[in-house]
Length: 350
Ligand SMILES: Cc1ncc(COP(=O)(O)O)c(C=O)c1O
Image (cartoon, rainbow, N blue to C red; front, side, top):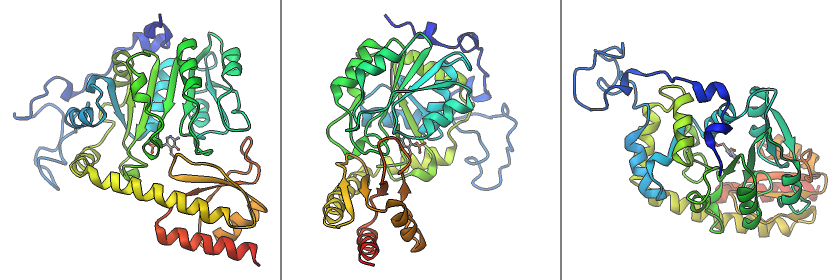
């Protein structure tokens, strides 16, 4: 049995959270003289002058239907990066506990661990970008509090074998964070289905990718109630602002826009892959379950600079583990993708 309370940092376990004015009364109507706001208001009186709901209850109600997960199992934050930082703060004692990552992967895991002065354990993916399950399990100790799994993985674009993820969930006695930022671009995985069986699983999702709302900074963490309560206890009181909540609700009324965008991006991804594969200077275009492609190029760094000089900005991943000669390309609009292919052709035909 996994005891979440035991896994927590001792100071977090004992923490008495800040009680905000809006914690004490959740009704909509009333004379609110409790939070030292400007009651007269300036712009959008009655809306912008008031603090937002600290627990974003209405938005969570709507998300609960979309994701088919109870709102008690949902945390909302300023991007999924906020949830990541809070999880490290909640479970890892600085200079004592460790976070395990599997490079090449999303760079923020290391940055968030470093900011929190938490040691990083690295167990690289295999050359075909899969989890080395045995090695991971051999490397974990009582100090390993969190394993980060990014699937679909950034920058490799593939999903991991579900059996490997399951194995880690069963055998590892700490917290498993499954970052599914790109999962809307694949039909092959849905980590939310594993939540009921695994008390130690946290699934991260975001509004920044398929939902097309990177600007509003809204991320989701799904987990058992005990973990969600901890995240709520340690977050800033009004961590998600009212404008963000409002824009997210507006979008949820028009869910089909997201579905259309995802379908176009997937079509464009496959078209771009075929077009890239025809270019001589390309060695490999890796299969993608995300909204980007990773490909291995001849003279990758020079190509990266050539494109940058022509105002086409892609991501140089050549220095990442197993990614020699690799560049990462976000799927653009159809017009942008045509321009990109033209310029790559120009580079190799110089
Ligand atoms: C794997 C992965 N997780 C999370 C994020 C960031 O998500 P958010 O914008 O919700 O902080 C990114 C952004 O690139 C990402 O690649």
